[in-house]
Image (cartoon, rainbow, N blue to C red; front, side):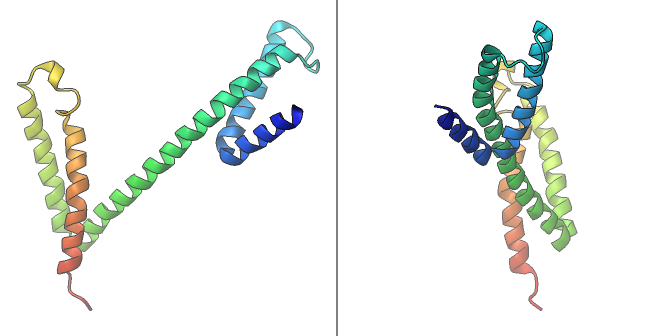
Length: 154
């Protein structure tokens, strides 16, 4: 049975190294705080709180690892989109400025339109930030492709 726990522990560390390190540190500190709070000697091993903390560690580490994986995925998407936007500004500053000004103008127009809508319809589809980000994600690569097509070959 101990070999199974060791195998599980090693598997979690291999799968989520950052999350496992952070949660291990937090749960070791929590164990010592628990021992001080209950008044037991620090070097005396107490099974119930150690087992509870280990089960908590097994639950929290994959969740924290999933959150870290989601953040890395979002960072990769944002980096690629911003790379396209920077490319547009480098290739043609006028095109980048036009895209930016158009979307800023659309934002304020959208706010004026949605001001008259009932409050309960304004939460998801009518949110100008979501709509403009989606539109920006569609327009930016198109302008990038047009700029690559139009620029002269040396």
